[in-house]
Image 1 (cartoon, rainbow, N blue to C red):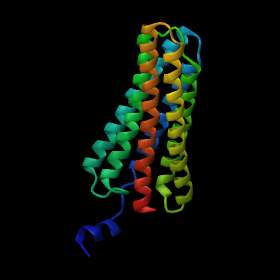
Image 2: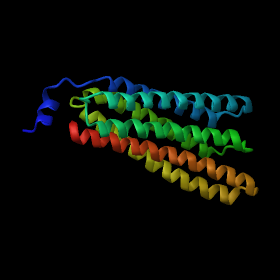
Image 3: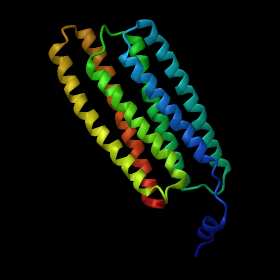
Image 4: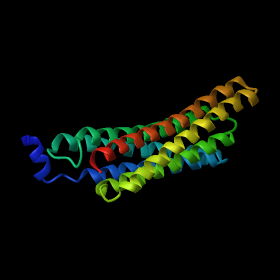
Length: 216
């Protein structure tokens, strides 16, 4: 047996990463909650405020992710492969970044309306974010929560497929119904960012599933 393998078995694993990953997941959920409200609100001033709040969450996420990367550089034994810790932190940060980008486009473009399709997509993003948080919270005890983790990953994939279907309907709808070329371009870009967010959530589910397959 290799020395490194022996060390990984007998050396105590630094568990500081679990609270940090859980904190990132919490920021992700808070961002999705604000995004959901953004697309449901009809108050222009409240929308501006929500966009600013989402930006604040994005900055928080960057700080926590930076802390995880720094800890990885200073820690010998991690709870699972450092590449997997890095990948999970990185992809969750990507989700938060895309949510912020979506919100900033709403703020920048100020579309005359936000169609019901955008509300539906934002709701799917919120549900997917909740699934990520639940899955990440299970990681510290994954050998006992194998079934629940698999269920969360399966639901994340299902939600991404639902988002794809809604996205296609939304794009067809705005091209069919929107008479202003400028408004069409605005809405198309916003809808695309929502769909990218759902895709990034699914990418997060894939990373979690990889960890699960390796260690559960």
